[in-house]
Length: 632
Image (cartoon, rainbow, N blue to C red; front, side, top):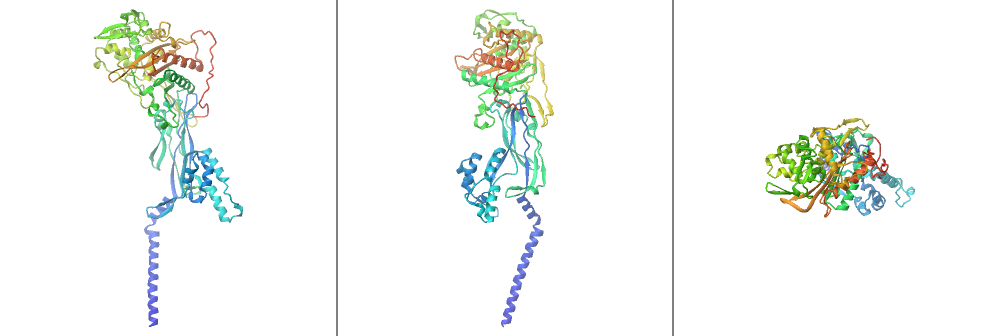
């Protein structure tokens, strides 16, 4: 009986063992064969990583090689809270100044945290990101600080395992991610901000995964984003505790850096313009102001500025209106500066000459039941004097002789109603109505800059065409694109759009525009000591709610010098300068003079008037921009 019981127990035990071995065997078969591929993939997913490596974004430099926008690589600093133990306060006190964080905030981030997996397991979070965009210099200081960290114990007297803990804490508890981030830097802050634009981060899918990259959000950064961006690389490697195991790196493909863009902008000239606009803002308190400096023969833009402005290093800190490039996005009635269109067209067609006289009717002209007035009543005026004294009536009568179709042809010929083609995003066409939409008054109002809307850039390019012998140029902002070795990838050339008026008509127009800046003209305050200036003032009442707004004006002056061989054409436009000084002759003309005088000294432009004193050919300008001549 006893033997039978013992045998039964042995059988039961044997069966149980057999079942256990069978279960173990099934488990082995399941792991080794049935689920082999899935488990291998899961293991690889846990240890293998493919990092898409962002290429360095190309530089943007001015025409002399000064750096305007560049990129630097930065680190993402992380921590392994599990290695820190109870020393969060000591580590936080050491690193907080270097990471520019508060001790309390940093100590809180160093606390050990757990998370629940999809399978319901509770695990310790192996690492936490402390800060992005940490400079390489700051990261080296962090490493040195951790290496020198003291914990208030005699480590030499500790057990080897305890000493190993402190070594790992110093070397591994704080680490940088295996990949580098990139930071866009504008070393001159707001200088040329509306030309440069700014960048923003975006995610882009590639064959190697999703890469977070910088993308141009405005200005040249956006217009030439494809050239500046470069081509990503990738790195396939193994990781442990979120850190790369370098010996197990499998693939390491270097990214291809972006191209470098060289602008036609001159940083020193840009600074001159911006500093003078700052003076204008302080003196006349306009809502905004814009200025553009163009080289008439080529259409190269040497400076383009708007105030208020912004710092592209931190664009989100500024209102959207500050980031708007008003020189190409804002339209307004140009006022008297627009008179150059009708007068030059009539001279070109031979309808009038500079000495042709018109009765300006002592400042009151009735046409189509509406009265047109002049601020300075006159009787009979020659065409030259009509321009010099900015007679609305004289200009309207010239346009009446031209007829609406020819007037419209010249308006369009000078580029109004079309974008100029400047390589910036957001340029508008303005408002120019076709002759079919004109009413009876239009022929007398459009030529004096009422009922049309243009941008400051369109207006300065039209004046530059007259300075350039009647040849309208496309505004040129990009000089060339080069690679890391300075080799030219793309070279841009000046582009003539059309011959709007003859060279002879342009010379006649220059004579008339010179008289504007003479004693008899409206812009005596735009005169220069060493150069003859040709230009035109403009004062346009702002339109709104179906009528003109009382006490609100756009004031402007556009001129070029030396008048016979123009080197620069400069436009200054003010939006709502405060009363009583609101005329273009009072506000914009002096700003033109100041910009022109400083620009002429800086560029060493040869005088065309015998000076009473030697012209200083070197600028004593203190430049607030980087003057590195390193390869772009």
